[in-house]
View (cartoon, rainbow, N blue to C red):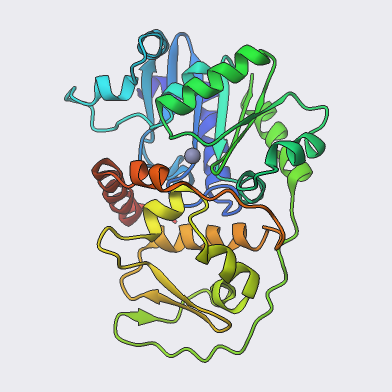
Length: 327
Ligand SMILES: [Zn+2]
């Protein structure tokens, strides 16, 4: 693996990954993943790792492209086939199949707050068609991560084999290119096209006092989730995207934060670095959703599928990686 890491394409991928991972408008905590294909091997971010730490720790896993694609042809997820194999501490990203199905050498998947602010809208396909006009892009309606998402991307590539930009409903953005520099330039171009000015916070005087297991957030901007009437209403009506459900809601019903209408926010006294990053991203997304936007929330069945035991194991892994993360 040490030899492979000296490959210039892998060095470029790690540099790009770290840069993207440090931009909270593109990646929050362990979200997002990147990959490069070299000589039949897909080098992909390990599950639960933070892109921000890509330069500081082992974060890439090699996977045989033939094997991943072979599994897909049989309707199987490569990750579940590999789950039982021992000797490899790192497990490939949940989106391994998606990276493999794309023909591009370099694939970048981010949870861009601009993209999500559009991708939660029922009219996202039409709005994206205007904003991304001229770019080879495809709309991918919400499907679960893993094999279902890879299959949808595969269908989109059958519709347009030249597609390089994929907007994922209630999820984020994927771009593919031949080099890291081209992928970065394409991502920048898309981000410029879809950029939304966040709603100015109509900051009401916060009259919240810390109590019991709740405390005031370290980031005072978070108060907008309660103080801003539009943001508060949007969040009351449902869950916008998977990370919001996975990291900010507890199976026991205890949440990472509580918002008080017209006032502000208190966060759990035990809020983790991961949850803070996800909550910061949620603020950025919600402030970019127009107050009249027709929102497509995650369905109860989609939420149920998300909040499985497997997801909580994943979350524990992310939290343990966060403790050792070099900031
Ligand atoms: Zn994702």
